[in-house]
Image 1 (cartoon, rainbow, N blue to C red):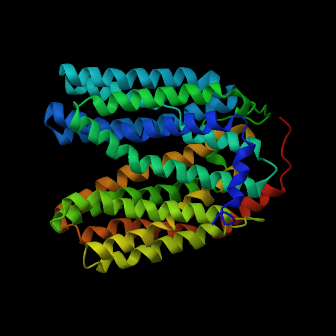
Image 2 (cartoon, rainbow, N blue to C red):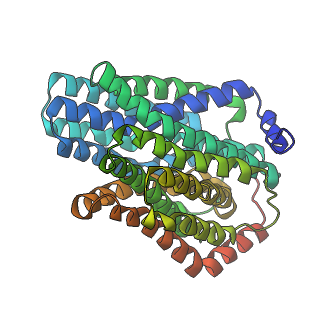
Image 3 (cartoon, rainbow, N blue to C red):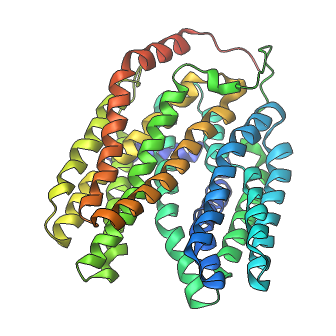
Length: 409
C-alpha cells in the first residue's frame, strides 16, 4: 500500500507544506458549510424553506456571475491584492446575514445581503493555480497534486454540510453560518499569508475583452461537463436521502451519501497514482462514460444495502472526471488567464450541484424517490454525450495549446 501511494510524496515539494495544506483545508471546509448553513438558518428563523431556497439560490448565482470576474482581476493584479479585499467583503456580508436573520430583518434584506457572495474568492482555484505554477514543467507531478486537491475538496464537501446543519440544530440557527465564516476567514487569510507559493502575475500583450477566458477553445466544454458532474452530486444527495426516508431508514440517508462520496474519494486517490503522459483530453470521454455506466444500475436498486454498494461504485468515476478536467484546464488556458479559466470550470461544478438538487427535488415530489434516480443518471449521460460530440474539438484544442510556446512572464 505504501508503494502504491508513493507518488504522493511529491506533495512535499510545497514550501511550508503544513501551513499550506492546513489553511487551504480550513478555508474549503468553511466554504462547504455556507450553503446548507444559510438554508437551515433562514428556514428556522422564518419558517419558510421557500425563502431559504431563494436566499441560497441568489448567493449561488451571485458567485457564478462574480467568480470569473474576481478571478480575472486575480490574474491581472495577483492573489493577495484582489482575494484579500474581496474576501473581506464576502465575509462581512455573510456575518451581516447571520445578524439579520437573528433580528428578523425583512426577507428582501437577506436576499440583497447574500449578493455579496459575488465577491467570494474561489479557494480551490487559488490553491490549484499555486500547484500549476510550482509544477508547471512536471505534468506527472501536477496530476498527482490535482488528484490530492480534488480528494481534499470532496472530503470537505462531505463533512461540511453535515457540520453546518448539525451546529445550527444543536446550538442555535446562526451557529453553522458563524462557524463557517470564521473557518473561511481564518483559512483564506492563512493561505494568502503563504506568499512563497503565490504565483507571479503574468504580463500579457493579449487584448482582454469582456469575454476573457471564455474564448479559450475547449473551456466551455469542460465547464459544461463539470456542471453536469455537479448535477450528479447534487441529484444523488437529494435522491438518496429521500429514498432512505421512503424505506423507513431516514437516519441512514447520510451514511449512504457517504458511500457515494467514499467511492469518489477512493477513485481520486487511485487515479492520482496512474501515469499521465502526453495528451489527456480523450480521458474525458472514458471517464464520463464510466460515470454513466456505473450509475445506470441505480434505476433498479431494490434496497438500501444494494443502494450503498451501487453508490460507492458510481462514485468511483466521479473524481477522475473532475481531476482530468482540472488537469486539462491549465493546458488550455493562457497563463495570464489561469485563475479566470479555472474559476469558470469550478463555478460550473457549483452551479450543477444547485441545479441537480433542485431538479431532483421536483422529480421526487412528482414521481417519487426511486424514479428520481433518473436525474443524476441523465446528467451523467448528457456529460458523456457532450464528451463524445466534442472529442475532436477538445483534443484539437489541447494539441494546439501544447504546441504553442509559453510566453515569458
